[in-house]
View 1 (cartoon, rainbow, N blue to C red):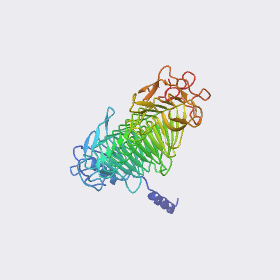
View 2 (view 1 turned 135 degrees about the horizontal axis):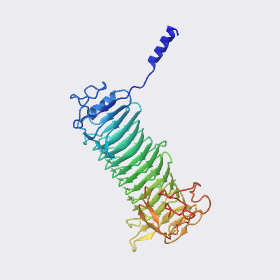
View 3 (view 1 turned 120 degrees about the vertical axis):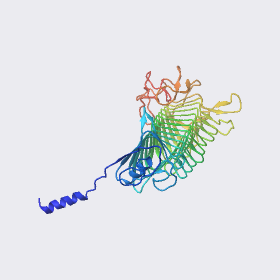
Length: 500
């Protein structure tokens, strides 16, 4: 090889950009909130030589590469007030970073307390970031802007085994506010957070949100939408909720549990329960710029309440496919104790149980449709049990059978105890039996509560006898019920979400 060729190769190698080596900064003091004395020297050290949480984050921000901040067991309280970078107020993260805490016996033992001086983490930079947070509890965030505990923009944010408690904002996202970001949450608990704006617990707009095996409970939005979760897909992004409980959240306007706008969604094996709103107690789905498509499988909506319409859920300008799911004991002072739809909603109910829901729960005479209020769009029901839903009255016995109000279509094998108020526009007639043989909603196996059939129920083995057995309106065979139990027991499937 000539000297010239060798020189060219050496020069080319020198010009290649190799990724910077990652560093790990291990915090070694929990009792002090102090700054790093020389950010960028790759040494986490305060003026006393200790490595505080704040100093570790400052050093990670200045160091090129994806760094890790390791936070041992203890309570780390932020005490330096002010704003501008990670040196004061919240902990700004401006580089790819992993924050990892500690556990003992599966319980989190690392606690980061913002002590109401600011939020905990403010994540964002000119370029896209990747941030992972695990095994920490974040408490007492308090932000005048958005995101009571965490604010993120243009970030791929993954949180695993995290708890966010008692945080608040005068803006949106009592615990978490994320825009233009992909957010992936696994085993994350959002509890007792609040916002003045939308998203008492979680606010995500313009990015995908996935929630798995998590709890969103007792969060509050005082003036807007989404007591537990606010999600705006902006026509392009998707919400996924799986094995998650959305419980006891409330909001002033719509979507006590979840508010979904302009984004597709799947809700699987989850419970939406005990939530409160003006409209859409458990879930409010609204399409403005786009028409969302929402699939709800193996999920229960129960004991949600509204001041106006849609105790369990409200659907407007969207398509909902509900399969193997339960709506029970939901209340609306207005109409649609279980489900309320308006405008161009399209609703498919396949192997769904709707029982014990109430409309006009204050007996004012202003509401109807104990289970369904079809105020717009189309409904198609198959293998669905629609029974024991009522409208409250002021005359003894103070309720009257009122399963639905408006027009629905039957795709066959549906059971009801009363067709009062229901107009079946097409398809086969309902099976009518005044004794549907159902029990109260309870834990009957599987991840969600269900309404079990009792012995002798007319819903048992009353499904489609043709092949394939127990298919939905799209010809898809349902091999299991809501609990995961086999659908074929006794030769034919049962009507509703529960297989006896």
